[in-house]
Length: 310
Ligand code: MLT
Image 1: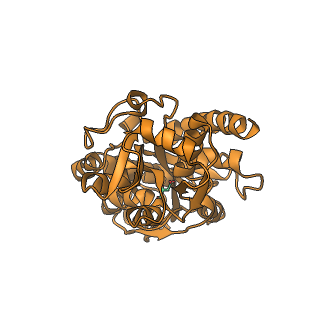
Image 2: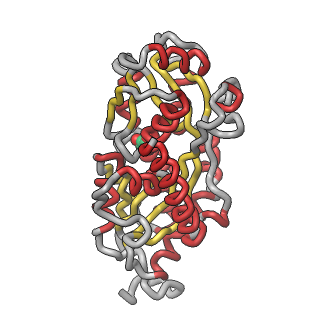
């Protein structure tokens, strides 16, 4: 409408609360990051950002739902690296990441940690590799469904070791971590935004972080390179999407609110406590986000294709 009262914005957008779909369970890493930025985004937009968790099939159910939402800016999707791996993992994906969405901006890149139930026998990554090789029929690997970040990291890990393990899928690593703490599964890869508290609290065993540099909030945890698996590198980039066809001026309003949220000192501090940081301001743009998405679809398509072919 034209009576929204803000003469700077032709559309008057937003006039109502905005829903953001999170493709995994509440309380997990994607949910955590979304709620962190949702509050300051809502403040700067003068509306509520309402989180809706849509679980299932490694995040692809949510992406399919968001792809067909009204392209009016009132439904956003927070998604991560899985947006670029799902095309290689599913033959019948109900959406095309590049043509069914507009990118709003990148949000953060989160390191992953390799963790296990606290009484799992191996104590180092080297011991984990040996243990998994010797016990591949009984060891269980948790993840958040085919297409999730933990699934991708688990695939890379199994490829690096040369084993095929029994996988236990969950609707998110929130519930997977609860089962790991409870001892129902042996180990998994998961983002520092979910695992930092349990690692520092001693509720799980941690072997390594999957980024080139150590994480400041977990200074004693070696990198995969230091610990002997240099090929295991994953950084879980997150971005905000809206359905294709959303007007450019509406996207511009959302991008600006995202940039405001990422510059918020409270957000920066909360992310730092959980081993991550907002992306640089020039990455929180539709263009940078789309460029990374395109590049990553190529990268993971090749790696997953080679993995499944070989
Ligand atoms: C989640 O929020 O549960 C995660 O991002 C899961 C994952 O992709 O591993």
